Image (cartoon, rainbow, N blue to C red; front, side, top):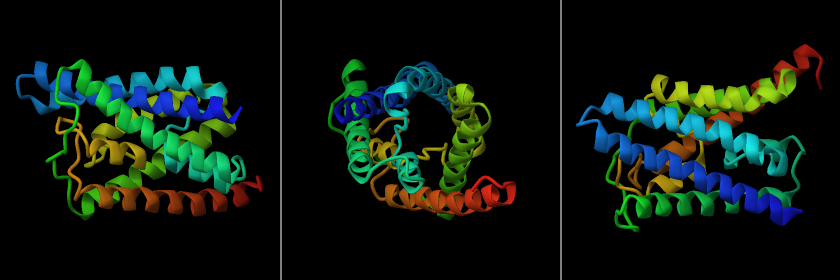
Length: 220
């Protein structure tokens, strides 16, 4: 059973990164230098892929595709330590594999290092907000209308590409993998730690908020 879950998280995260990086490459190639058009293509493709992948793989592993989500589910007691660690490894390896696949299908060098700097405290805080909002979306839909969770997550991420200065990575595995693509979706290695710190801050703030919110609502 665990192996099926790990494969699900690997496959889903890999295909998500194919969508993220591949749509960034395609958008940049076809937009004639218009960054807004490239970002729009990137956001729509990522949201659409998330919607489908969560529907397909949700029944197998929960379709986390994100160490932050898995860590919160571990905190809630929904994952054992071994499954939690297996998910994080599967997601991170899958994310890097997805980047390599995207490079291959667009006939680019497989091994790259991004030079796309994404620095500064505003972007770190942006990642905190993006991560907080993602977890809020997941938990709120799971409580009120779980069948529509894929729709909620897809819409949130599509929107967050545009209302966050960081373009809403909200995912440490994605952040690590995007260091290895010097394309539209990349992030320079020196910028990645700040993004990961922001994502962890978003997780911690959300955990405190959701517990307080749930106590007030009488749900714990």
